[in-house]
Image (cartoon, rainbow, N blue to C red):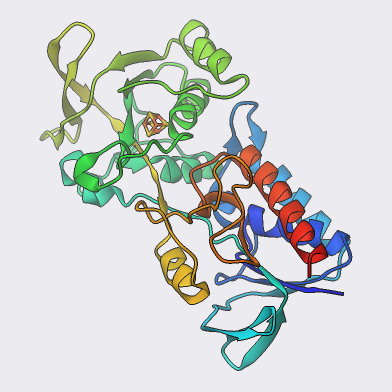
Length: 338
Ligand code: SF4
């Protein structure tokens, strides 16, 4: 029986761990927080089908029950030492032997306070998409002044495709997240006007384009091509934005009651530290660098160390699960060669 350590207990980590345990390996998950499931715990429902996030969380918790996987919560990898073809991994005083390691450390949401001009944490009614998921969960979508918002703007590409933030890449899933949230808001608040301010709309996967069409045709969401340059607050507590409609070439100002910033995905800060410990390469963006883009995204620069999920690049929940399954396959292939 081979020993495998999976670092990170989000969806990618748990799915990979279950598949590796199913193939007869002894698997340990090391997770720094106090529960499994990662960021999915904060989500209300998922695109494009509005599946409740809890259903996916139930899936991973039920799946875990089928296997004898050691789960170490509130634990962090502090040191790594070579051990023959494998490693000794230390968390506090505990040592784990590993023949292979899977890094599944996830992502951080871009810190929207870095875009000071957009008013996050300065004005009460400026939120990120993650805050709005929490509001959906609580069922309270009122403004800070206790009223249903009359007008909401959803601002795309916050901290992604942005040279000033040093994030040139597209975070891939925020466009469809914005469209999903716009539809949910329209259902919760049928009298509210909802605007999406975008640079390009990237509806890359199955059913995404249909969701975008439905947002326009059935929910009256208005899409304006333009980048919001400034958010301010007026004396009546309403928000005001400055932007340009780049299709008509006209500058625009608009009064609003709520703004939702679609913050991009960034490499987690501790992914860099973990990458250093395991001596694997990262991209300039901080995401883990795959050995071959086409022939195995989960294979890293060092033999025996693999990756799964959003520590490699931005991806949806569906893609994260698919990626975890492919990484588990790569690990099993590697173990056969030992
Ligand atoms: S997915 Fe859309 S909102 Fe997100 S970075 Fe890409 S273009 Fe911008």
